[in-house]
Amino acid sequence: LNAGPLTTLTDVQFFVSGASQFTETGNTATYSSKGLVTSGGSSTYTYTTNLFTASDVGTLLDLSSIQSIDASFARQSNDYNHQEIAASNRATLDLSGVTRITGPQASNDWLRFSINDSGTQLKLDALRSTQAEAGTIRFDLNAGARLDLPALQSIDSTEFHLDGGSTVNAGALAAISDASFELKGSSRLTLQDQQQPVSIANTHFDLSDGSS
Image (cartoon, rainbow, N blue to C red; front, top):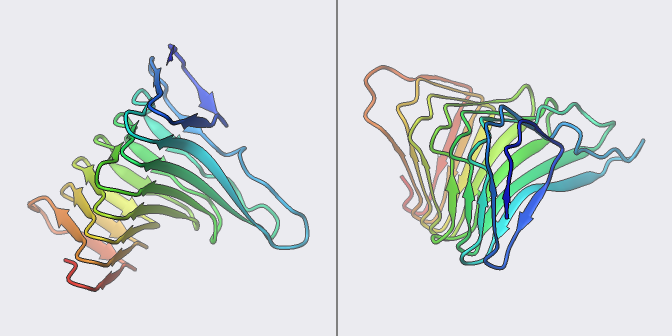
């Protein structure tokens, strides 16, 4: 299915599987998920909302026209809202036009990107910055998954969780703040040759099991 050109995408969800292909053309300035949240009232609940899902061999979800992802939703009562963007089982999720990702406003809320194996592709080639107020942007890679972020310059309130020999190749970062890096199972984080010092603040590194 080829759709477009679309100029705005607000509170839209995409689910593609079984070798299906979806391509969205045009020049979409922003994808916003701020309305895709749930509140349960006075009690505390955790709600998970899938934003983009691509699964199975031969599947393509092409949203490369999107230039920024805005998940800067506010706290919902006492609840935790987790928004998910996932590629799995050798599918391709193309977000190669995204330059900026903005995460949630409240702690315990997150926007998570996940890749579950070595044959799966999540494309974020143009991503330059990640930022959140008090919430978190997460990248979870497992089972030899690989993520290339060649344009990445600054990260804020962002966590990287790598396991099972997974790899993140990042650009020449200039600033890292309120971030964490957890690498297990011989996973690897690589930065391009730095031509200038990196400003690092409130950042935690946890490497184990031969990771580097």
